[in-house]
Every structure is written in structure tokens, then in C-alpha cells.
Length: 365
Ligand SMILES: Nc1ncnc2c1ncn2[C@@H]1O[C@H](COP(=O)(O)OP(=O)(O)OP(=O)(O)O)[C@@H](O)[C@H]1O
Image 1: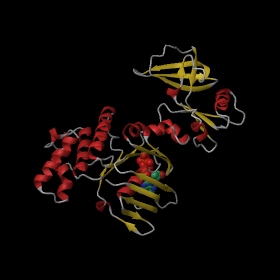
Image 2: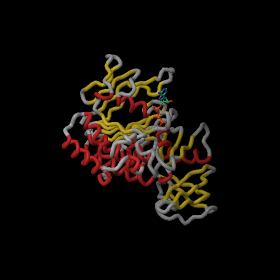
Image 3: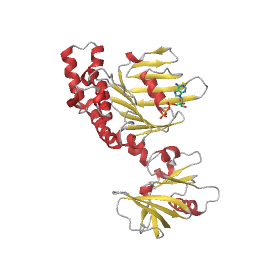
């Protein structure tokens, strides 16, 4: 299976503005890479360049040792010669072909003999659990089944690289959850290299082996999902990944209130740190008696939002609103004063980058 390497990749659609700028990204052999970011950040453009559906303005794309695009060398390999499987948001199936015929279509184009074609289509449909509906037509399937058939159609040709652009966005919450697990299983079974575009951070965190967060055409961080969650490289990633999002408190020139309290704590822990902003994840904020080493302050409970397995609590701490998430029942009620504490703070410097000194000091538990 091949490694995909993007170097100095850029795309301008002509207006001068760049949809993707100077992107260096390696998708390791067999990785499940999610391109994650807000609408318009350049995810789809990047995927379409890998597929050969857009030509880069600058840079190179290689798969294994095969150069697919090189603007400098005037090289461009058309999509049909890239040997990649594509599934986009609108997974148009041929309406006049049965499920089986839809899945066999790509194999027929490749002149695979009939018996082999049939066996391969059945195998792919079994993989996505739609083998019971092989003789139906797309209009007789649910949206989720159609989505699975589109995946089977791609899997049948056994591509070494799969490119998926928000393929689950038309499904309801339950089917999306089911398909995430399916895709993860298919990835593990097939060993294919997958690039998956999404703006849904939960989708990226749950499925990917690697997450690339983009903003305004630029790569912000590339990391395994849990590493990205634990150590976001900058404020953008910190606020984009996580729900409810991380609270970020600006320190300012003469910090008072919550910023002042947090700053006194971090100065006490790591003298060299002069952060511009301090981040707190909701689940790192706890209620009750703090351990001696933790930062703590009294807090006013504003709202308690139970959701079955989690309790989200809105607190006012030194005049700042913060959210805490608890995995055990919270018995406080609005109006109560409680102590909240955390040992898990994230520090950012003036340009928004994560402060290495804080992590190096082992101050982040
Ligand atoms: N064909 C095009 N012509 C001109 N501009 C385009 C074209 N396609 C995309 N763009 C612009 O390029 C930028 C990046 O778009 P892109 O679709 O890659 O973002 P995205 O992150 O995939 O967004 P979304 O999640 O909304 O699909 C946007 O500013 C968009 O308006």
C-alpha cells in the first residue's frame, strides 16, 4: 500500500486567493487520515487535487514512488489513471442498474471476467452488510443502504487509496455512528490508505489514525487524534477540536479576575512561563475539594444540564463563564457556590502557539 506525499501544494482558482497554501502533508501507508476544518478551509480542494480532479497551482503529489502531479516538471496524471477509489457526498448510483450491477460496474469497465466480477461484487456487498438487497434497485433502498452500496462499488475494485468527501453527511445520527464503525472495520480489513474529508470533529476523532486540521488553506496540526486532543498545537486547534469547546482565557497586560488567578498558579508551577492565553477543557474542570497541587477557585453554579451519562455544568468563576463536564451525577443546583479545580491547563503564547515549556515541565497532567 502506498504513502501519499503532498509537498508545497497550493491551489488558486484564479482570483488570487489561495484555497490551499504551501501544504506539506504525508499520509503514511495504510493510514486513515482525516482532513478536518471549518467550511471553506480547503479540505475538498486538497482531496480533489489528490484525485486528479483539480490541477495544483504549485507543488507535487506522489503516491509511493509515482509522481502524479508536479507543476515544476509539467506532470499531471488524469484521474482514471490514478487507481484511486472515490466516494463523494452525493454518492450517485445508477438508478437503472440493480445493486449488484452497480457494484459490478467498475469491474466491467476493467474487463474483469463475469464469474470473478460476480464473486467480487458479492464479497464487497457482504463487507458493507447489504448482500441481502443485491437484486433491488437504488430507489428501493434507504439512504444508509445506498451509501453502503456506493462504498461497496468503490471497495469492489480494491483500490489501494480511498478518497472520501463527507460521505456520511446525508445520514441520520444513528446510521452515521454505525457507518463510522463500519468504515473503521473496512479500513482495518482492507489495509487501504484512506483520506477522509470532514468538518465534524467527532467523526475525525473516532475514525482516524491521523488528523490534519486545516484553516484558511493552511495546515494547523497533524497528529494522531488523541494526541491532538491532549496537546493542541495552537489556539485554533484547541478551540476547534472538543465539544463543548475548550475555554480560552486571555491573560492581557494587567491580568485580573480569572486570568490573574490562573496566571499566579502557572507562575508558581513554571517560573519561565509568560502565557498570553490559558485554556481549560470542560472535562478537566472538577467540582469539590481540590488536591493540594491543583488550581482552584469558588464558583457559582448557573445551570446543570444532565444528559444521561454526562452532566454539563455552567459555572461563573471570577466573573467568567466556564463549562465543566462530569461523568458522575452532579448534585449542585443553580445558585450554589462550589469549589472548582483543574490540574489540566493549556498555555498559549502571543502568536497562539502551544507553550512547549509548560509541557516540558510536566505541568500538564
Ligand atoms: N471551483 C471553484 N472555483 C472558485 N473557488 C472555489 C472553487 N472550489 C472551491 N473554491 C473556494 O476555495 C476555498 C476552499 O474551498 P473547499 O471546498 O476546498 O473548502 P472545504 O474546506 O472543503 O469547505 P466545505 O467543508 O464547505 O466543503 C473556498 O474559499 C471556496 O470558495
